[in-house]
Image 1 (spheres, rainbow, N blue to C red):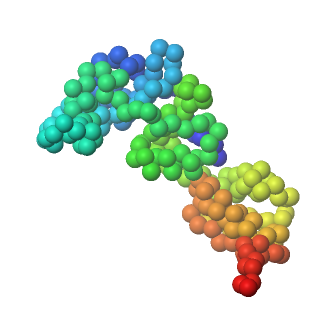
Image 2 (tube, helix red, strand yellow):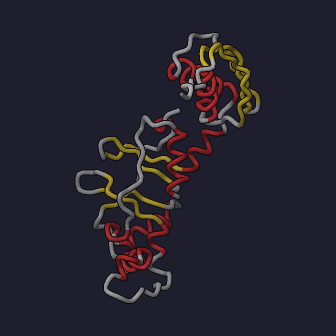
Image 3 (cartoon, helix red, strand yellow):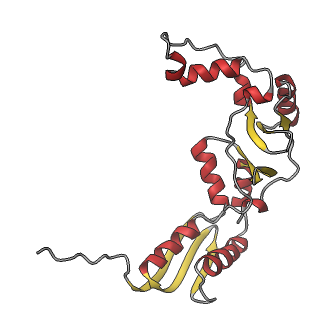
Length: 224
């Protein structure tokens, strides 16, 4: 499943010069946690979130002393900058964490977890196409067993591994996937399991796929 299949295309944005008070009103009024910030050309230049605005309300951390204090204490520097912000452009987090429309949903999930964000602007060449949230990814996980099996057959077996129909049989029950069949190499079998685990809606994978050649063993040259 691709990000473009889940993203919302009607996205509320703010400009770099939008007053922070107005940003807060949008976030609170529409019940969202963050907004893409765009420049005059409509390109995403940052994201302003509830966390960015909360810098205005938190106590200012005590800065270290010395001429290099700001360079050594990144947290204090960020707090000072965001605490003094008056506009979205001054408060936003940049560069923005974004994702392409044709990226796999698993990639979007990885970015959200690793970067600690709740939403990702979906862009192509910097242009905003939509937005995908954690709630969207959770919704994808609720798909039926039939939908999960269809994606495994179409996207994993046919498009990713170029396997003919029937080489590997797929059964899905309650999100648990069972794979049966025989592939040429052991590495193919292991890759298949890895790719299937990334399909939204898959709870677990039980692979009974065998292989004809164990191509994972490397020949070790005899010592002289």
